[in-house]
Length: 450
Ligand code: SAM
Image (cartoon, rainbow, N blue to C red; front, side):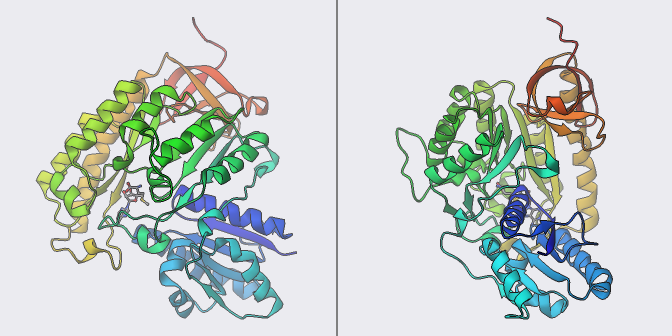
């Protein structure tokens, strides 16, 4: 059977989609190739959130077509995911070496399409139609990557987005919100835990909007909180995370859940995007700066140690120096542990792309630098404060930067590197933080002072 190599661009949802496609192909007898040089099928799972991500994937495919295809003409080349969805046939018109274009509701049919191509039934395949219940098809996992059992896993609970932020292409690439059922998700989580998984991260484009249209609020609890409670019941599961939420999803029921569900870890990634009410309104975010600050205050009241991170978009059309100052001040006021800063990238067919007063690139660069300094200064201070403290980590495996050491994550989602070995993998262990680097902590499991 052929071998496949999948390269993924973008968010955790994309990583999860690629994993499910890889697992589905393995179930059909495919093997996973270590890289594109030896693969019979090369798939790029793409991201459209910013132009940069699209350009990277296009350049990569051009290079693959020039190198790999010339020496091995039978290799099958394909695009999947968000850019495949939004550009469809145009991708083959632009890059005729591409054989396959798989949209965001067709991932589970990749094996079928490859069969068609290998058997000669179809020469090229472009499939980007909507498909009923496709949200329930991202289910299979690769649980033994690198011959080791996985400790953490992503579970996709829904697809699509109905928020229509004026900057964002996601509602057009992922479609309307569609949620899986609670029993289906719980069954998947149970299987993962039976295979040794200890921590599950629930995924959705706006994960907190889970089940809104299908499940009524019961006893003041939204569908998402009902799902958290059901997953919390699973014996052997130690930690629950989720990403990415929208601030509007932090009702009192969710905030209160952090106080009573011990497996729901004290960590939240809450995209604020801007600190200026004027810009938030233009973005169609649906909250004000004051409402956002109120959510953070309530969360910290329930969980004072809450690790909070965010996303910021800089240089949204019309953003003035005064608006930017508001973003700097929200950064300082909340003291986020980390912020992912995105320079606004106009996306086709989104309202913001046609707005007046587009911000020149040099201004975006300059604001990026200034914001980065504030983010790094606050982050360094927060990480430094943890030195000398004890923290519980879940050990995930070797450190990415130094495979001779092991890494784990605190409940607040901070990476801790320590001298350990494979026997620590999967353990929940206490470490003493002995040093802080740039957004990394160094721990010692042996010297725990009382
Ligand atoms: N749930 C999230 C929210 O509340 O908006 C959406 C996650 S989005 C797929 C990931 C991040 O990409 C966003 O939070 C935003 O900061 C960034 N992003 C989206 N569209 C963008 C654009 N046109 N230019 C720059 N950054 C963008």
